[in-house]
Image (tube, rainbow, N blue to C red; front, side):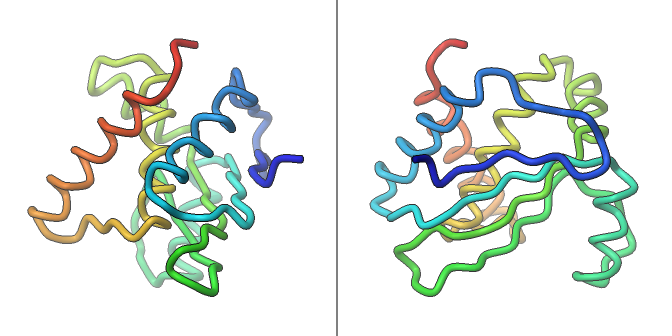
Length: 142
């Protein structure tokens, strides 16, 4: 039984090829020498994620993703990743890439946060982009 789950909060959205995405995420976790406990992806609207950003992080901004790390050790992956589908759609259009490509990048981005990668400084952002590309290279053609 998989320990990776996909939920939706205030929208009707299910990722395409969820079983292949689950396998891919497990592959990334293995490559990064971590152990999966449980990973929940919750897809929602801009407004839902905005309110979470205000309520839990005291950030009065829209964002594409919020990651909550619930693990008890650095080697374990246990967390909840909230993703705004509205933001994914808008970002994919502004970057002239497919919705699926942007969705997969953001899915990987959330996992990378749980794996210990940050994106606060320019150096961290560059490393995060490099790691996102490495993750996406492991994704089978869907």
